[in-house]
Image (cartoon, rainbow, N blue to C red; front, top):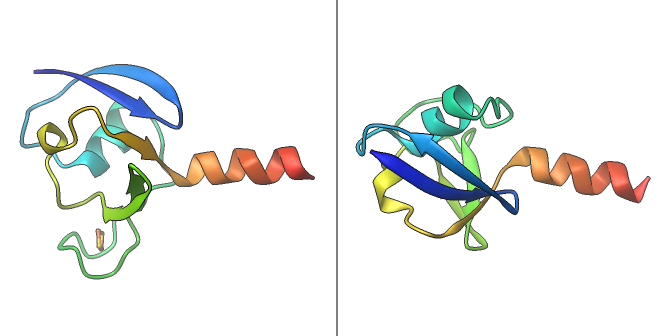
Length: 85
Ligand code: FES
């Protein structure tokens, strides 16, 4: 399945199985390794990203559930901090 995602304000086309958790799409397909795997069951928060401005665990929702929502990862925060310095 081809997914059209908006990650950190940039469009990305990604090939992925629909049930693949968003976490693995970010890490493996896009190389955004700032989003971490901790517990893998939605409890620890290591994988937290924002989806349309709302904090969500990336280890749990399948990428097919994200739709056209805007995803922000820790890499986006790092860029904002670097620009402010
Ligand atoms: S890895 Fe722990 S909440 Fe996602």
